[in-house]
Image (tube, rainbow, N blue to C red):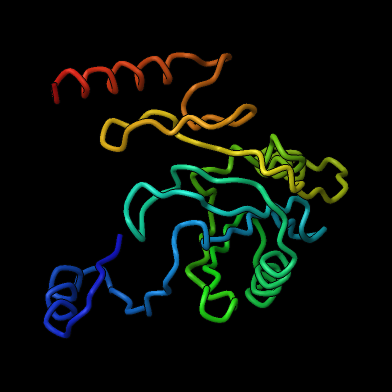
Length: 202
C-alpha cells in the first residue's frame, strides 16, 4: 500500500515499482497507529448525514501502514466536523470513510484519504449506536429515519487471531472481525489456519 522513503534513491525506486498505478507522494506524519482517526458516515442524497461514526485505530497490520487490527469508537468533534465538511464540498452521498492522522507535533489533523466505500472495521458502528450498513439499507428502500451517531464507549473491534501477526484479544465487550456466534464458520476456519501456522513454525 505504501513505501517509506528516506532518500531520493529510495523514492526513485518506489516510483519505478508503482508507476503503473499513478503513485502519490505524501509527507509521513510521525506518531503511532493510535493517531489515526476515522469519520465513517452514510450520507443520504435527500436527508444528509444519517449515520456518523467517530473512532481511531489502535493497531494496524503493519508498521506505519496497513489495515486495522484493533480499533475503538471514541467521539472527536473535530474529526467529525472536518470530515463532514469535506464530504459536503464533494457533494458526496453514500457510505464513506474519511481518515485523518493527528500530527503529534502540533495537534492538527492531516488528511490521509477518503474512501467512498465501507472500511474494514465498519462492523463496530452497529454496536455503538449508528449501524452504517443497516441505516443505508433502510434509507435506500425509503424508510423514514432520524440521524444517528456513535457513542464514546471506547468499545473495540479486533481481528483476534492472525497467522502472521499473533493474538490480539481485547477486554470484553468487543466486536471481533471474524468470530460471530450466528455465523461460526469463518471463525473456525480462521482459528484452524492460526493453529496450523503455529505448528508450521514449531
